[in-house]
Image 1 (cartoon, rainbow, N blue to C red):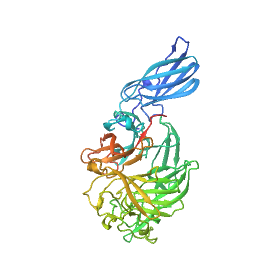
Image 2: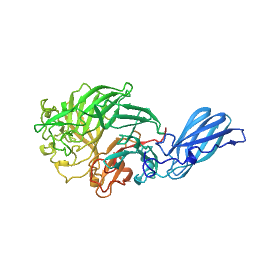
Image 3: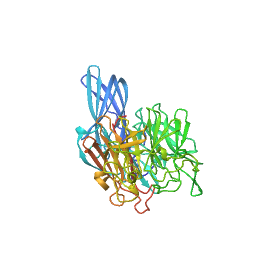
Image 4: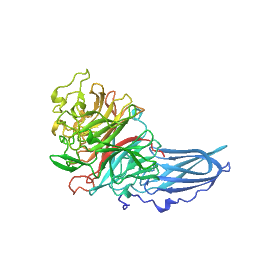
Length: 515
């Protein structure tokens, strides 16, 4: 754990055990309320109320303020325990407690003092807010803070006014933990290199799973419909041959992991399907030829869409057959770790216009972009839309193999697997140029209630004003209904740029603040 200026905001002892409140109302209800601030020691803006009554009651609690947050416990009991989430930092919070019982109701207001947030947390400015057009919920950020070559992770949720209302102090892990996501049971899932954690929103650890030491998790953990996980991993003993040299590779396997049995069920070697010698967009070390960063499971045919920052998108079947590759048609050769597999060119998708006409060769190879089409360059976070199309964050680094077209965007593609073609259906971001350009990380999500798109540029202009952008856009007319700027406070400014030397926002989500 860290000092006061780090992630841990230690609870004030006077409020860890807030004095019991006894009351008698005209109807004769007697009750007591005990408050435990940050009961699990890693979620400083939460509290647990222990309520005892002389009559069976249900309870509702509401953090009062400009944007109230409410929790409820509908079951009736004389011994209640209810979560309080969404406390304001560095404030004497007023929390309304409503007790309903047969024949009456009692409303009381208690006070809970919180400490300030860590000094290195970002400042957040909400630039645009059209609440009636937005997806419900608050704004969750999978954020990681520079820590001299490592990261200290603290997922954050902020409200529509830019106030931080929740965060998890994951500094105990000692390294980056992510991505931060809410799984189907409502709990939070994060992962380190070999450790998978599950917490509830109060910061209570529900589960901790260790994977085989031969694997290292990198970038993404995906929950499957049955609760198992798909993991992006590297292995200790995977090598490729490039330029007549044998090189240790990284982040080029997927594994199917059974959480209940803590067991690897299946493994996919992506080098079996791709040309490991293709370095057109690999500006990292030679062994990081793929740089896999995201997975998406297609339940319609049990296939997996894989995002590789240095190669593009590909689709692989559950029985380990390559279906297609979405990438500029330049310098694709034979697959395999030793280049002794099969030709990859037949699996490359051909880009076509909205009328189904293939674009010219210089567009197919990526040397030029059309007004209404471009490939995803250095992509992140592909996901399937309800119509079966793919949406992905197109980071855009080295677009057209140069540094002259710096823009990032959210983009939707329609793939015709039978004819091995694909077309661009929609995009947002190109028109905003460098203002949304993020060469690394970042995210895009479909929002189911409004059908809006949430775009996250997680690493904007680090040499100028280091920040991130979160934009919710209506795809009908590309109008922004929400926009926020996250201003980082990189803590290692005297260090050379690199991993763990600058703050990053990896992904963001729209999320309800409830346990």
